[in-house]
Length: 237
Image (cartoon, rainbow, N blue to C red; front, side, top):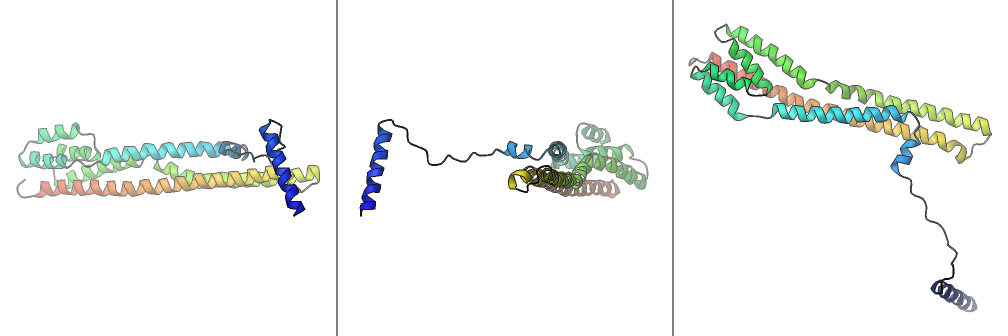
């Protein structure tokens, strides 16, 4: 009972001191929060190439994604107009429409129309060749993501080796194996490894995502080209 009373009186004295402006001794300071930038800086100089690879991967993915989506956006009226012009014998109007349409299929159909009057086999070959060039343009720089997906984790692994070397060097210089001595090497090891893996995974996902979109685009080009050839083979033509 006496101990409880003494504790109560002590609490009252502390509150009075606080109200009167007397300093009260702090119990424990709040832990300092470490920012993401501070953590990345602990990865060492190996983080520079990893950061460069991440910027390149993001740029290539966004640029290719927007470009592919822009070029493969379906225009239903385009093929309908082409069919109408061809069936009515207005090849000049069909060529003008193709030249005014900034789409891969338009450039492929333009090649076919420019070969009208020649054997169907030759028209098919010209469209096929034009299609290969269009697919190449759509796939341009996509392989860069595959390269980054492969080498970014390697840079992370290199950072791991550098971190281990730093740990053993610090131990050899101080003959101490405390956490304070090995922490710098551990930071380099873990941060670089994690960063390299994250960049590699992002590039890997981006590469395969773009390939899925490209597969759909190529299928769409082949379908429209086949419809155009069938139109030329129809008896009405």
